Image (cartoon, rainbow, N blue to C red; front, side):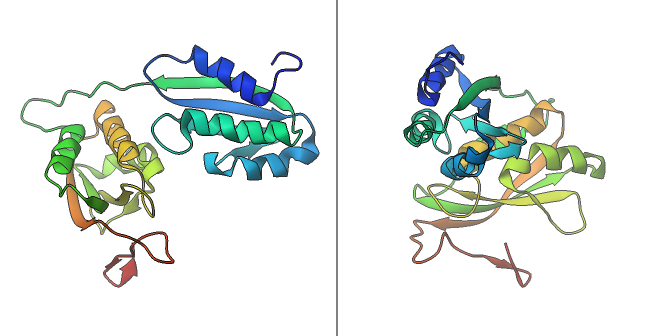
Length: 218
């Protein structure tokens, strides 16, 4: 980073270098003074920073979380508190092209898009399941689905996850779609099922609705 450049200014510089169709960017912030690290991590909380020594590892998503402008605002808060450091772009990803499923098999992306099209216009919360065709795919699928916090479902090779449209418990619809697309791209076939749907939920003194399945909270 150039001498005298603010973190917000450096972010502007990195953002201009991103491809036009970027979806997420992996950035490392190295804090100048180690004593500032806890405060910097707290201020950047909405980005869920990961700590490694004097570094904070950030993932900025274009269509979820703080996004481009929110990230600049958070870094500007660090500038305002006199927390200096260097900001470097590690990698970025571009819009993924939907994988083509073999003849006769619907891709998970297609299943997701069709499922959303069939939902009520005011849907707010989903409880979904991805059933895999082989237990050999459990470990790689768990890794690819990690951003949606998948949970094993029963004894079969399946994962369940929640999706929240506006707020509350669950991954965003955009993140769920992206993770399902990754399964397609890695040739992990499966069947998507929307198990439960809620519409127009308005939580009071809670982050979102709670479902009980088999006596357990999901």
